[in-house]
Image (cartoon, rainbow, N blue to C red; front, side, top):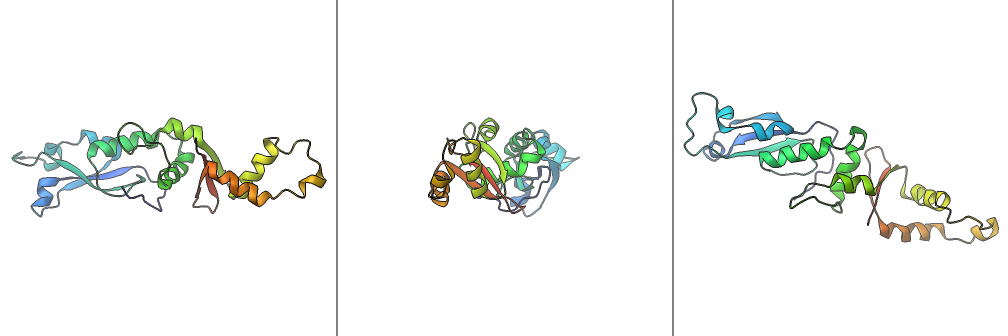
Length: 183
């Protein structure tokens, strides 16, 4: 599944359409909040009068505010909405970045990210990877008791590059980076 590269914080919405109508050359559908997609029925979509003959299958043909590209079932759209609203608004861009990275942990059998794993792995947004690496050095006490004389000989850039093997880093829209621990 392809990942969307530039998503602003819009509420998850989906365009649900009748697949049979689409295949017949008739674009019949409407936009819904993604959390309501499970409640859309063919009768609701077609209105009255409704002839169900071969027009039972609904499909999400477009969406916004969901961090993947491509079509999906209305049920999948509703599940994405549930996952996205489980994360605080100020962390939603970070969740999108985690999904974009491809190294996110999926729940169940689908592509939905695990919010508990997101919370466990997310280390925050930083100005740069190097800023985070320096934070680990200082706040983690790794240089505690090391004299200034010895500190001059430490290759901090190499240490930060080596540390990167244990993390996933994605750029934010603000020019910083989101940092995720790889477990």
